[in-house]
Amino acid sequence: MGWICQHCGAPFGDSAYRVKSEESGVVLLDIIVCQHCHLEARDLGLHTEEIGVRIALAPETTATQEKSRLCVDEQKSDGNRSVEASVVEAARN
Image 1: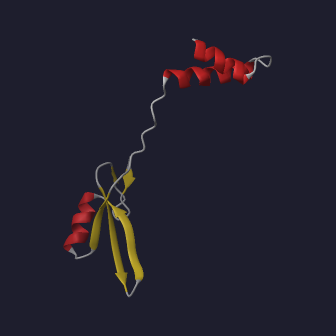
Image 2 (image 1 turned 135 degrees about the vertical axis):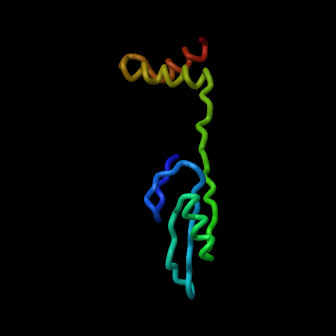
Image 3 (image 1 turned 30 degrees about the vertical axis):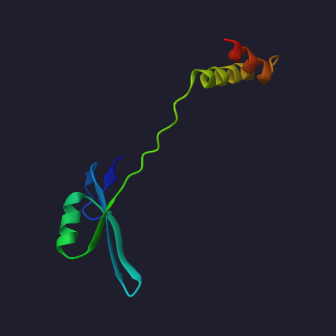
């Protein structure tokens, strides 16, 4: 996943960091920055934290699921066949 640093504007693909600053409960600064700007912010005494990127993996498609999907697609193109008949045929194969 690519990021754009909200401080320097440079694109980056490695670690992203959030830089926050609050005063009396009011958020003054809340930006996503690159590693270089993160180090600068940390040196200035601002609160920084690394952003953990979650990667959602799609579940693997089983052969039976694939056959069922293909049969449903086939049924859409053949108006005389029912979805149930297509799924039964796929299960037999």
